[in-house]
Image (cartoon, rainbow, N blue to C red; front, side, top):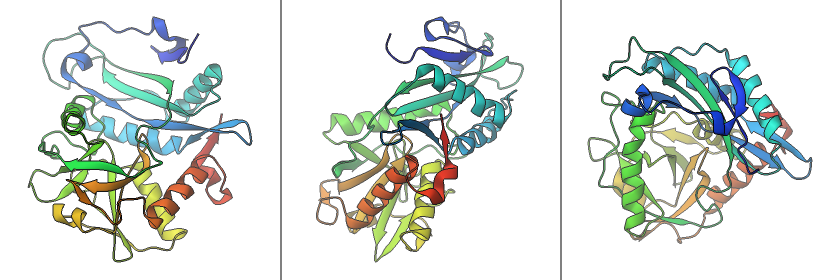
Length: 306
């Protein structure tokens, strides 16, 4: 039997084929769910799997669920224990991805956030590269704006809001690009990628949009900021970025649980730098992959062994 074999559903771990929801489920009808994406990395040297920054992801899940008035009945410790138990049963010997999902599980009609039954499930899948991290990818500026905090908050991974990301990603792929850069609703400032944060190297400094620019408060983003400041010894500046700054950047890259650290070689057919992965991006990418596979003792506390 191929992975995944199991899911945590309705309070227990069961065969994934038995984890089914009613077609009337509120979260299916109205997108009223909050999800997380957590990576589990296989270290071939130690023959062990490590879940990267698991507690921080569950802390974010609980905080973001408050935005949709979803109350999670499990503690962070319980969620971590359930996840580890699930992964032990799967016995991955490759990289994997964990998807926790808190949601309105009631069957009522109407988009209100109150008066609904609520639940949580967790499953995992094998997952290698979401974007090709070995090369510099081509991106375009999307014609679709990022949602604003006062519409559907991008800082929360709200399931229904990812229609916005789907429109952006699909437009990019249909037009021959690998990904999209998305602008905030003012049409001027860079927000992020379709489903990942963005960084720019310019003048020896690392620049990224602030969390008030309608972006996900990324855990990988936070990781890159720390590695850049503490190990690479670069200044990191969080400030608004204009679209045309992307065209004259020395380097650009995406980061995220799915994207990991992915170099950008061109934006809207304008070559970034020399069009290849830049030295800062390469250094941060190498550091990131060493950290997530528990190869750097200083950051072992970010890695939970399965």
